[in-house]
Length: 89
Length: 292
Image (cartoon, rainbow over all chains, first blue to last red; front, top):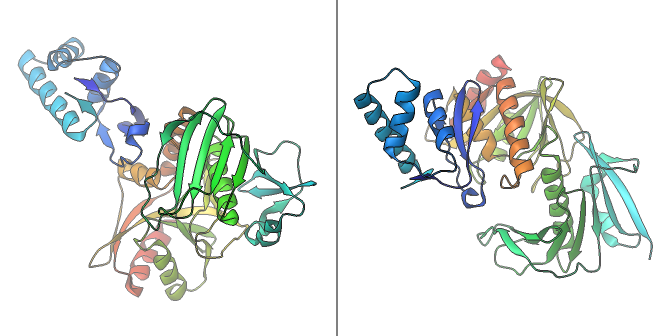
């Protein structure tokens, strides 16, 4: 999967948001909030093709989390991003 | 033919308009009179009304697809900047063409019809796009002033921003309207301030005044009257969707984000679920005046 062009991660008062700033998102008024962990993953995969396994590895590399928990979190986050329309499958 | 230049100061930014001395439009630009100032050599931007703008290759950047009653503003990339095409309604042909340099400091406008509409629109667009990275937001809002503070009512066209302002004027003593459609918000010395402008939609309210912002209130039609504070992301989204500017132009996207994220930390933001009734103004004012 891949981040859809035009969506930008912006810090916002201790949180993070993803907003559409490209031409394709001109009428896209939705905005997605990210916690710092999700923001770290987003930044790590910006501009690249990536898989749930890549996200899992990023989680286990940085955080003290079991492989199984990380895989479940990564899959849930990827599904959420796809559903929100900010990442393509 | 002699070109005449006039300058206007809106929210502290001075811009210039150049048209032929004999141009009849000079006589009907009443909305700019309160903002007229001395002509200066380096305004933030200059718009010139010309006989002809040269045709050129263009690449679609933003096409508005307006409804019948909405205005058309289509934007194209051209070799040396941008081309804007405009019309007052969705079902009439384009009647204004504006060529602008990449920094939005110089615009040349050619008009075939609806000259006043085109000049007003061109100036608004130039203003929003040029000042987006100067701690400035051109907003879509109706603004009412009470106790020396400006309260901005936000919402899509038709949700009742203007109606809510009227309800304040009717029900809350000591209020007046600052602007009914396109006020300017700036961050000045760590304070968010709202300014009147020459653009106020259908209401002729062109006040050259400014006040600290008391609150942003998103108007939401509902079968009852209730108000609550928005979370930070909600507040950002709300004020963001009410600010003019083409975010796909990087300088503008960065500028808007920077100003907006500052503004929402300085000013309380609310959602007002409301009917278009007197009670709405009373419920709203009671909450926002107490926290402004």
